[in-house]
Image 1: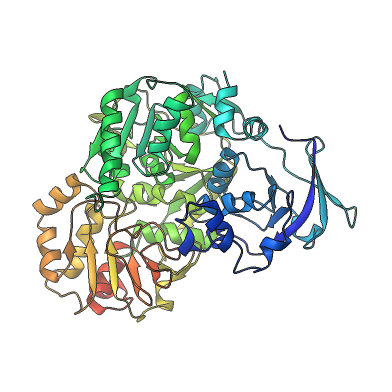
Image 2: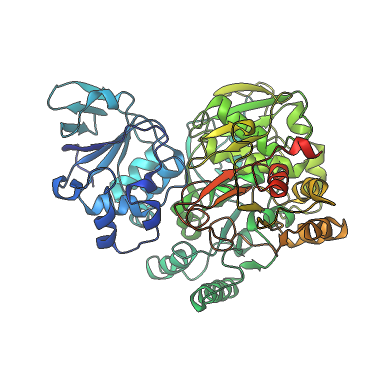
Length: 167
Length: 418
C-alpha cells in the first residue's frame, strides 16, 4: 500500500520532451539483466555522481511525452533499485506509462512541474488531494488523478499482486 | 448512439452498454496474441503456473502464439525458447504458428483481424489490425492479465480522428503520409487516444498501406489505430474472420477528442532521421547522404505493394556495388505472391539479398551494422542500436525510397526512378 503522502527530493530533471528512457542506462546496456550492473551504468551520461547523491524516496522529473520511443524496463529497474520512488512529468507516453504502472512504480502527470521545482528541492505528493508541493517554495500544483485501475495496481504494488487481489 | 467504433467494441467486450471515453471496465479480449520472446511469453507461462496455479487458459481458441523472432534460431538457447512455446501450446490447445511470417501480418491473413473484434498483444504494432476495424492494443506486461483472468482492466480511450483528403503523388506512399502526419501534428498529438483514420485519401489506399498507417500508431502517442471497415476491408475479412461478429462503425454523431484533416496531395517523400521516431524530415534535406545498408521489410512494410514499387524501381538496374540491400517479405503468403508476380526475380537480379520472413532484421539480430554505418530502412524504429552498433544510424523511409537509395548508395528520391 502506498502512503497518503510521499516525500522526497528532486534527484534529477530531464528537460527534453519525448525523452527516451533507454538513454538512462545507455542503449548499449539495454540488454543487461543484473541490477548491480545496471546501477553501475545508470545516469552515467547525465551525472556521474548520481549514484552517490540519490537517496531512497527521491523523484525524477520529466518533460512532455516522457517515455516516448520504444521503452525497455531496465532503466527504471535501475532507478528503483537506486531509491527512486516515482516519476513526475509534464505528460507521459502511454506505452511507458502502462509498463511502469504494471511494475508498481508510481508515475504522476503534473502539467507545470518543470517550472515548479529545481534539482534537489524537496517535494511532497498528496495522494488524497492530488497535489504536488515544492517544500522550498510552498508552491503546489495538481496532478492528474490515476484511473481506478491504475490506482488499484499501484496500491497492490504491481500487476502480479493486483491479479491476486482482483476477483 | 453517438459512439465511436472503439467505444462500440469495448461496450461489447466489456459488457458495458454504451461505454464512453473515460469509462473504466473489464474487457474480455476476443483474441490474445503474442510472439515468443524471452522475458515475455516464457515468463507469462511460468507465472501462470507458479504464481497463479493455473493449468489452462480460458478458451484456448482465443489465443495465438507466433514464432517469428529468432527465426531461424542461431543459438541452442533460442531454439529452447521455441521448444518451450511449442510445448506450452500443445499442452494448452493453443495454436502456435511458425515460419509463416511476421505475426502481425500473419494475424491478418489468418483472420484474427476480424472486424469488430477486440485483440491484445504485448507488442504495440498489433495496432495494424485496426485497418480492418479490429481494436488491437499493445498492453505490454498487462498481457499477463489476459492469460490469468478472462478480461483485462481498460479505460476506454478517446478518439482522435484524422481525415485524409487529396491524392497522393507518384512515388509517395502511406509510410510518407504517416510520418508527415507526425511532423504536422507532433509526436504526441493522439497521446492515450485511439487514432481513427478516415477520408477519401485513406480509403483510396490499398489495405496493406492502411495497415502500415495503423502499425505505426504508437509514434503519435496513440494506444492504437482503427478505421471503420469499408467494403474492401469487409470483402477481405469475410472468408477469413475467425469469429462471427457484426462489424461495427462509428456513429455519424460520435464524439471525438479531436478532428484533424490532412491533404496528402503535396506530401513529398520523407525520412525519419536518427535517433528518434519523432524526427521526421523532408527527404530533400538528406538527399545524397552516403549509405551502406538498406532494409525493406518489417511488420510496417515488406508487403506486396512495397515489393511491387521496389521491383518497379530496381527492374533492369543494379544495387550499387558494396551496398547491402536486404529484402525480407513480411510473410510466406506475401513472398509466394511476390514470386508469382516475378517481383522476387526482379529484385534478385538487381542485386538484392532476398530472404525468408522473419522479424530479425528489424531489431538488429541479423544484417547488423557496425560503428559508422548508416542504413535506410522500412523497419519500425530508428533509435540508437536498433540495427546493431549504437554508433550506427538508421533513416526510416518508404519502400520506394529504400529501393531508389539502393541504386545510388545514397539517400535518393524515388520519384526520379518512376
